[in-house]
Image 1: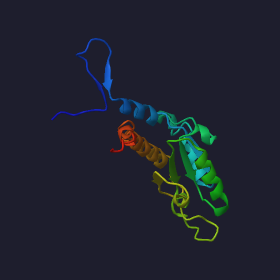
Image 2 (image 1 turned 60 degrees about the horizontal axis):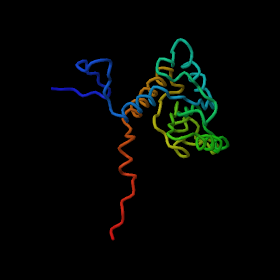
Image 3 (image 1 turned 90 degrees about the vertical axis):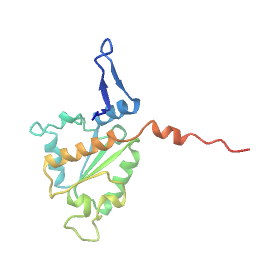
Image 4 (image 1 turned 60 degrees about the vertical axis):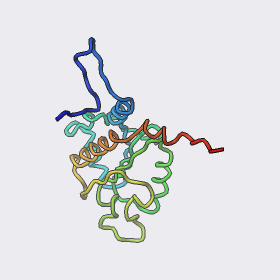
Length: 175
């Protein structure tokens, strides 16, 4: 059985040559340079901060550059309770992020509203923005956030880039 890999090294070719597809290389660059934007709204934000500390070391995954500007970030980490008063600000910041953009809902409150079943709490951030990865817990441990970031990296690695160009080219009309 022969295994195929995204990035392959052929030692039979003279010199240091790496053979790969362009979209695999671009996805590898993108997956290893995710710049998260912390959207810490409640107690889950403390665990989000702990993930960036030396004990858990988020920099192992190329995500240590926390950006507080939506135009410089790839991934919004919504950590905590989203109230209706804050929902418009979260949506506005999400809209200001450049494509491709990803969202992680961290904790029970960001995912489902948590224990707050009231008129003022949004019952899941996925009602206003699309969520790529959910992190369970109240509050979730930093290891759970790291696991979600690894799942997001795997999702980015599988995204087709150049294959969509053929689909996007206009088909000439029949005359």
